[in-house]
Length: 422
Ligand code: AMP
Ligand code: GLY
Image 1 (spheres, rainbow, N blue to C red):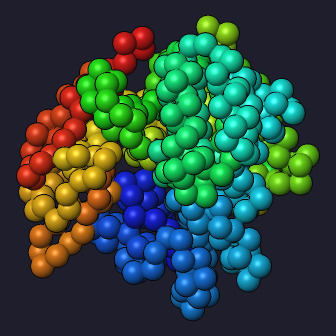
Image 2 (image 1 turned 120 degrees about the vertical axis):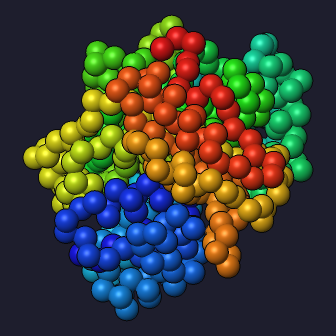
């Protein structure tokens, strides 16, 4: 088989790495890829959101299966476009991707079908939104409706802060057209966990558990990022809780999408808050998480091609996923300044030495190769992923490898894998 992976992050490097292990795969392309994906795939310089150029590439190069990483391409309808030309592609259609592409759509769906989530209101105009938050007391959350590269959520500790957030999104248009509509919701308290599942329009097959660390600095301080590290399994998701999440959230969401005429195929990612009143859905994503995918795929024993095929063909009820007993920990190494503005073009050293450590795989994210050097080329630069017999060993293995890597202005959290309550 010839495979095309779309995207250029750590998630896509992990996908390329795992797909390359399938005996059925002959050749992998990655568009646009990074300095790590080019080890096992041929990088193609097409941006991940240029879906027309990607289609032409897939048709010309007899691609048997396309795997889409980033949400943008899915929301733009890459799956519909590829399928209209008879190409196989793993991911949800444009209508199904609205589950991530519009927070208002997602919240309204959850309300309609009784899927637990924070109480909320949707606003299309500034004044009613301001009046609404003024009547509340305490913390509230203001969210831009559309895609905002993970930044469209503002946690506000008072009505005054919520006013500022609404003004910034709706008046100053800080997220552009993504903020023409907003969601204001109840502030939830608890531990966060990500539950990802394969869906085939009808059946749901949950992946093993993973937990992300979103805050930029140790002890969960600082601004939210795309994710500074993740580990799997997350003991917080007990078998009973997982069963509850399947019953109350994931299966109802897939059933609801089917009823709405928006069959959901691909990865459904539920970002959950484990509150005193049970798990509540913070958001749905319609794709693999980054960095959760790195530790998850490091532990997946089943051929990923088989799982993706079952999702496309509607046969997930006939397959299961097997996971290594070990724990996997992924430490994200970022550029100084991330998640705000950051520098690029710094020479990275030590990746090869880190990769030589037992059970370690260094997944590239924002890197590029220039005349024999690997340079930083993004906010999240590397995801050092290590297996260990237990969580402490995996953490030790990951940080031993992390310490071998240097560049000017390196930044990473020292407490990945350690959650207070797990
Ligand atoms: P989202 O993109 O909607 O998942 O939001 C990004 C992050 O904001 C989440 O991972 C949470 O840390 C936080 N967050 C979102 N919604 C809420 C909420 N209702 N209460 C508390 N924190 C939230
Ligand atoms: N790690 C969070 C996400 O992929 O959205």
